[in-house]
Length: 159
Image (cartoon, rainbow, N blue to C red; front, top):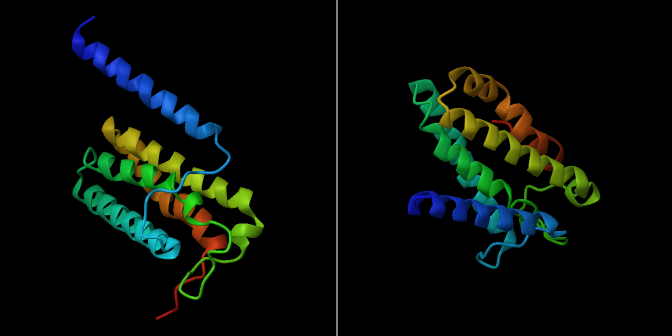
């Protein structure tokens, strides 16, 4: 085996071990933040919104393989969503509904759903599979984002 192959296998093993360790915990560890959990989660959601906007622009421009990096950011940030909603973090500046904590398992499932859809989009983009990317894009907003925003987020005011 070449040193490069050994390195890649070692890195893959490290990622698998880290993923397994994360999966075994009962709650997602909180990333380092500002100390204001509502501001931190709004910041993450703005990052996700920017990634989705860039994905849509790249899709319209036909830059399918360029979508992969943005979808990866969505997948990574979606893993942190449950940790950004600790009990007692419902404030006046939050758009979160109390249903998050009343239906926590559904909320976590919605977050996981975003991870799965983001990874599906990332993988299809890496393979330059136009059909799968297009099919995923068609339903992404409704299924990946909407599965959380519809039941768990106060809708923005109508203009």
